[in-house]
Length: 62
Image (cartoon, rainbow, N blue to C red; front, top):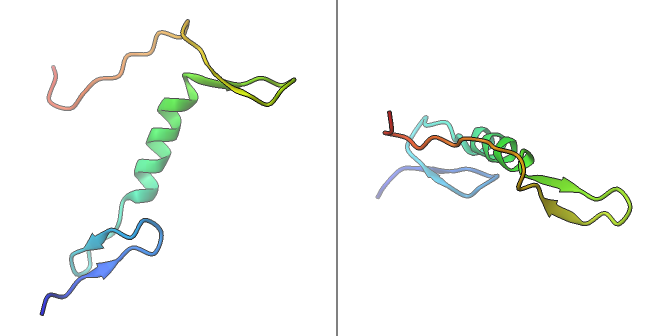
């Protein structure tokens, strides 16, 4: 019988005493998307901002 815990927020299966990093990942994803997405104040509709030049580096690249 395996022993593990389940994160109540994201339902990830974690090793004993392993902290879940789902909140950290959510914050970093939100920061990236907030640079590209805005809300039209008049209609409340989301739209992409293509004029922002943001470099997103991938892990392992130098």
